[in-house]
Image 1 (spheres, rainbow, N blue to C red):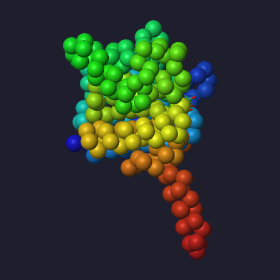
Image 2: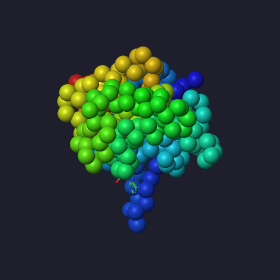
Image 3: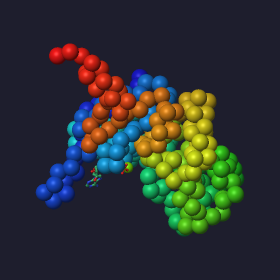
Length: 240
Ligand SMILES: Nc1ncnc2c1ncn2[C@@H]1O[C@H](COP(=O)(O)OP(=O)(O)OP(=O)(O)O)[C@@H](O)[C@H]1O
Ligand SMILES: [Mg+2]
């Protein structure tokens, strides 16, 4: 059974008279625990695709299966369970809760598990330590830099040890050393706990470490820049 199947997924947005095709018949599947990068210019549909994987939104047509289960068939009452247990989501804008500390933000993600408070606290702080945030547990989001907030959001997504992690530009605000540490953590979790990562990114380092890169342009899947360039060269050499 595939971990993820995206089958001919299309999505448009209507703004007044304007029809924006955000995704146009995108299809791919992931069979093994792996790291997949979703690359493409701004506005190419990356966040739209990721949002549908978490079922924050639904396709106009096509469907998505996670571990064989069609997302459009998950009842609303079962959605929280799907998101809490199976999925970790890192938002492009972090979506941390401003009134809570870094530690509390991560603890909150553990709440549905009903762990004893002390164990939840220990797991949350251990996860924050793994992303290099052990010195900032008591800080509110407003007291953290963008890169630090991003790392809290990453810890929150990982703390439940989900089998599928969806991350929207997780290195976008990180300096190169912190980004490198995050990529090492992702590789380690992928290998040791068989976690699958799907990462929307502009970051070449993420594409380089991914087993697979899916390129989007204007909502369509395209061959990557390298493949496209090679095809152009091959086409040029051919006699008509
Ligand atoms: N709620 C919405 N209403 C109208 N248009 C939208 C909406 N959400 C996204 N779009 C449009 O859909 C297209 C795809 O947007 P999306 O956010 O998926 O791009 P992206 O690849 O994530 O870009 P970025 O790299 O800037 O984050 C864009 O043209 C965007 O303007
Ligand atoms: Mg985006």
